[in-house]
Amino acid sequence: MENPGLAYLITRLLDKHDPVFNHGKRVAKLACAIAKAMEYPDEEIKIVRYAAVVHDIGKLRLPAEIINKPGVFNNDEIGIVRKHPELGYSLLMQIIKSEFVIAQTALQHHERINGSGYPFGLCGDDIIPFAKIIAVADVVDVMVSPQVYRSALSMNEALQEIKQNSGFLYDPEIVAVGLTVIETGGYLRS
Image (cartoon, rainbow, N blue to C red; front, side):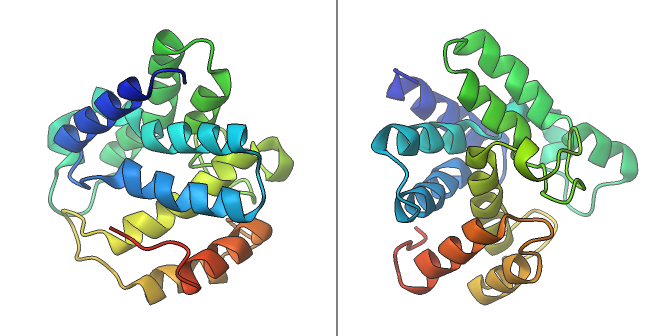
């Protein structure tokens, strides 16, 4: 994404629409720390950063009354929210056609390595590595951020979640690196 201002604008729009303020920035910070610790080249870390910032752009096409609903989503609402990766992919392909990998990462960030994710139920190596990194960073940040339907969980609770599901939902190498990055202070949430 050649225009960092566009990523900033998208972040500001998401912050106005989604109650988890600065979520994209925090996910980008953790995802980039993981990619750096995994010795990704600078150009790929830049892709991770942009993809993480815009990973939830599809939520801009969801009704605010659902996104901001206090309480648990019903099945219909869950179905609507689960469309945000595809909506985001579509929107990103209209905005930044030349950056297919960023759009693809946003599309796959809710896929899980055992095939239980969405929107396509992709497994293992069918999920691009950038999306696997963002999946871990995303779940950690969502868990430690207050939601309209629950209080924030502790970082220890979030780390326990990814540890328990390493190799099942989340890529074990990425989980191991993410745990090290967080536990050694290589990522400080702000």
